[in-house]
Every structure is written in structure tokens, then in C-alpha cells.
Image 1 (cartoon, rainbow over the protein chains, first blue to last red):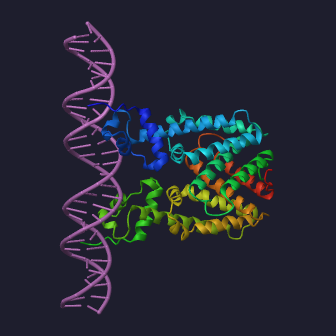
Image 2: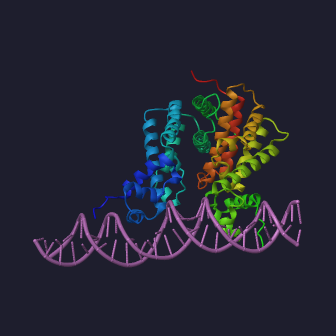
Image 3: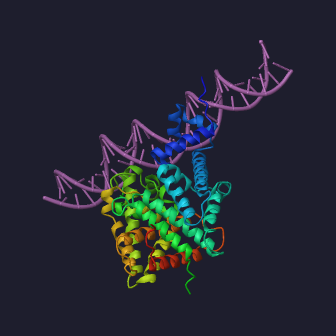
Length: 191
Length: 191
DNA sequence: TACATTTGCCTAAGGTATATAGGCAAATCA
DNA sequence: TGATTTGCCTATATACCTTAGGCAAATGTA
């Protein structure tokens, strides 16, 4: 019998594409085996199990997203950098909804530590260097930034902003304006 | 044979509790049938299918969450109201992670329209009445508020803020401070 | 080249979950 | 009391995950 030439990498890449087409949690070993015209059991030579596949897709997405964010950030500072980072996340989620969902997949701590997660945190901090925030405010701001970016993208992709005016692009621009204003004038803690 | 006394409501309630214990997407008809010591097929007298169960849990969670938020909001205005609403969401997510996840379950448009979703939107707008925002800024602000609340809760429950200082409670307080400051001084759109 | 080893895909089989069809007994109604 | 409806059952089909064991293709070695 001829061999199909499977590798973990090809399977994970195909899984990522499948995720974008049908949703991350519709990605199954069975579907993947069908695509490669191979029996399901054959995949176990390349992947430990179904979780291993999902982890691989998550790591791929985290790395791709970090690469895009780093590209977008290069040479920018201040509000330009803020918008670039936010747009990198939002655009990625819109172009690759399945991969974006994969990036939220809960990784075990060791895997997470080896992932591109750290680069994401570093980039948020890089954006904040354009503003004047000392610790611990910088950490608070990193968390707020992440919350707005992730929250907006999640609600938008869930269709939360779709059937009403003003359109979502406008609200997004204003959210970036608002974050910029906030970071330039970060409030002291309330008594 | 004695009857088990199942109803859709009992199944959905038990499903919600199961969701909090093991996670929303581990809620299965099989697990539920085991709990009630009944065969899986018997559940189909009360629920159309597995999606029907999940929809029921989602509607339950949306309604509970809206009730809590309404309670928290009663008699408050301005920053008090803002914090009350935010805390209602965050506390609910921490006490009932499975139900909170269920509230994110994608509903078909007709079901969504009949859900407590509208009450949630109304409550955000009620909070904003304590600030001075005319349309369309009010809508932009509603969306930002939702993004921060949902985004923070999602990242926190994913463990994003857990293994580092400052602690998450502090960042949350500062996020509420920041939102309040922002709403009191909402920036004009950028050229 | 010949043979041994490793690797890749296979069949077989067992487990879990969803879903439908059809039956029988309990509950309800006339 | 008898007729009807309702609730739970068994049986069956499908889909997915996973492990075990086998054989042939690919690779390494003499």
C-alpha cells in the first residue's frame, strides 16, 4: 500500500484550516482522516490523541498571532502601536475564526509556558511604553488592554454587534480612541 | 416500573449544576441520564435533543444573570451602578463558571430574541444614564463596557491573571476606576 | 545486494455519545 | 371501569475516540 505521507505538522495545519471552515470544536480526527483519505487509527502514529491535535492547533494560532502582532507593531509607538496591536488581534479573529478560537484553548501549564503566550504579554507591555505608566499600573493596564481586545473580538464574532447601527467598525475605532485617552490619563486608584 | 419524574425543567436545572461542576461542554445527555438513573432515550420525551438541553441551560443562565444584575443595580447610579453591574457579571462567572459559559452559547436568532439578552443591553444603557453620553456615543460605550466585562471575566477564568502579582481583584478595581474615568470624560472621535 | 529494523498505515474491537422507532406499563381522563 | 395519553424502556443505527496487533514500505547496515 502506498503511504499518505502524513506528519504531525501537516495534520495540524490541515486541522487549523478545517477549524476556520467549520469551527474549532468541529475539528475531529475523523474529519481529518477523511480529508487525507486515511483511516482514523493511522493518525495515532503522528498525534497522541485528539487533545494533542487541538493543542497543536492552539500553539500554531498563538504563534501566528504573535508574528502578526509583532509585524504590525514594528516601528510604531503610542496610539499607532495601540491600534496596530488591537487590529492585529481583531483582523486575525475575523480572517481565522477557528484559529482564534483555538488560541483560547486551555493549555496545560507546561505547554502554555512553552507557547507564544509570553510574546503576547511582552507586546502589550511594549505598547504601554508609549504611555507613562509605572508598575503596578502597567500591569493593570496590560490586563485592561487584553480584556478590551479579547472581549470586543469575542462579542463581535458572536454576532453581538451585527444587527444594529452604528456599525462595529465605528465602535471599534472609538474603543481604540477611548483606550488611548485612558492610557494618556490613567486615573489614580479610588480611595 | 416506577417513573423517575423527569421534566424539562428538572433536566435543565441539573444540567446547569453539572455545567458548573464539569464545564459546559462536558454536559451530555448521557451524564444527565446517569444522574437520574434513567436510560438516555428517556430524556427525549422531555428534550428535543442535546442542543435543546444546551439552549435551555443558556436561557436559564441569561435569565439568572439578568436577575442578579437587576438586583445589584437597583437604587444605584453613576460609578456605584457601573461597579455593581460589573461585579454582578464577574461574581456570577466565578460562582457559576459552567452557567456563565452557557450564557455565551450561540442561540438561533428567534431564541435569542426571546431570551433575557435584551434585559442585559437595557441594563448597560441604564448604567450609562449616570454619565452624559448622547447617541451614537452611548452605543459605542455600551459595546466597550460589554467588551471589558466579558473580556476580563473570560481572561480571568482562563487563568490569565492568576500566577502573577498584582492580584486580579486589584486589577479589576482599577479597571472599574478606569471605565468610570473614561465615561465621565468620553473622548471625541479622532480625526 | 541482501537482510534486519523501523516506520506508516491497516483491520479489528471496545468504549462513549447522539438519535430514532416501537413497545409496555403507569398515569390520567371519560 | 375502560380508553387514552404519557413516561420510560429495549433495540438499533450512526459517529467519534482509542488501543492492540499485523503487514508492507521505507530505511539502515553489512
